[in-house]
Amino acid sequence: MVSVLKRFSRWGDLVFALALINVKHRYKQGYLRIAWAVINPLFTMLILFLVFSRVAKLPSEGVPYPVFSFAALVPWSLFAASMGFCVYSLTANYNLITRINFPRTTIPLASILATFLDFAIAFSLLVVLLFIFKIKVGFTFLLVVPVILIQLLLMIGLGLSLSIFNVCLRDIQSALPLILQAWMLISPVGYSMDMVGDNLRFFYLLNPMAGLLDSYRKILLHDQMPDPYYLGMSFVISAAVFAAGYYFFKKNEKKLADIILL
Image (cartoon, rainbow, N blue to C red):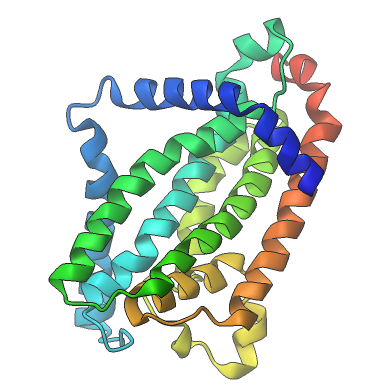
């Protein structure tokens, strides 16, 4: 895995250039443009607040529900957006793939990198909410970095796989929004991990986003270390997804130019 990450680092300039093109293309015709990075998670937070807090009256780990849900929505939005852009990244860039010889992995990687601009904006708003709701922030705040890196492993592995799958079967990009909606419901975005029974906890943690979102909340809302078991499971599964996704992509990379035009 280390050698793979080193290989990625050598393509950094190309990935960054493609990511910049993605960002410019995404926002150039939108009137609200970058404001959508805040509007989308805020709107989802409002829906979750009405459904889970006001109607279902679910507990929120002793913190105000808006910041409780937003602390999970920000990393979840990063995950969902990166998958949404990765899935059609290869088909949208078929002109480059069929005409220029370059590492094809840079295309989905650039799609993922481009979503970090929205993440940075939404995360800044989350920090503001932490101060508004007087949530204590300590040195454990820095532990967000390794959690983000683990999530990045997961996003790269899934993004590489989805981009290849969509080249072969275009229905993938149509089905993905439904899959992501269902995935969010089985992840602790609108509710706490404490609501999952002990007898189901292991199976629930097979969803790597579960341990990651719980870790974000422990760090940001409770000034605590992440649960090593939860985060450890997320890391192992994310690393396995990364390795499998990279292997699957490289195995099919040479056939991309032929398949993409079918």
